[in-house]
Image (cartoon, rainbow, N blue to C red):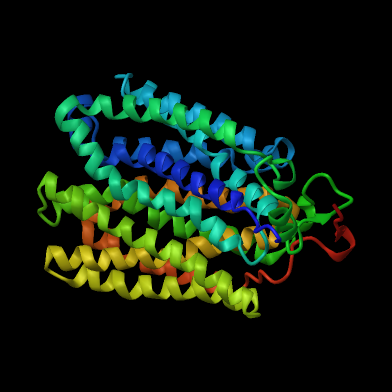
Length: 427
């Protein structure tokens, strides 16, 4: 009787989901305890926004180097190193009192978390078939967006019993433990993992998009001349600008503008993240299903991404216009949820376009995304101080419309590698 293929790749994808939970809990817990932290350390909104912006700046600056390093050293080492680095600086966030030192800590925290997504893109290219890559990408993304679902509840509980500093100590220790487990169970390729049987290996290799290339480094000169390379990056600038607003300012917005108590805010702030968790998972399944059924990736990736952006525009208008706090949360949940389709299609498209150099392409895309995340806390904090929350939220529909136009230029069916640079790879 023929053996069934093992499912090791999906077990590792599930572990990436856990890593994503830890990463985004580490990133979002600071926004949950913003008020007591600002009161204790004497930070105003602009100064607090700078903490989030410096994280994003550090994160952005390492995206391309992290992609190159992941391609060279493999995702196993890069993920373990990244987890340990950012967990140490998570713990230090609760320790330092000086504003200037706190800015340095959050900047270095961003540098530490930076390799996570480019390394995941390399892992997905190595481990998954072409009709599985959207679902593979959705695993880390789902964990990332499940983190903020539970972060408000967990963070408020820790804060109420142990103080805001303990939030960072506990999450820092947990991250180091997860890094150790990952290093033990992960490998860079299915071909060298002892638990992968021959049937799973053959199943992956028969439809894996890895090509043999004369180049050992990404052909950046060709990439930079390609319009869809720029479109992919610029649209992600806008997407992460919006997502970072939700991550950094949503709890404060619900407290100040919509009158929620701290305990009720924790639940309300988690609902938009639950929505994006659902759409990231369902979007990955739907996108891969369309590819499997023979639809072009232009339809399976780009059209789905555009649909999410258009739903955001309508939902944000309704969120601003409603007077009911609960309807506001409902519409904001639909806003953030709709971006889940765009996010998962962005990462799937990066691996489609990059193939062997998916670390470089995803690093480029995430560089732009985190430049948007750098701008978001500062600009949104300034807009709120000068024009109020309604204007701050309402103007987001303009860049989102631009992002929808940029997706027209992203054509995932065509690899960024030229035909002279790629040949079939034999194992």
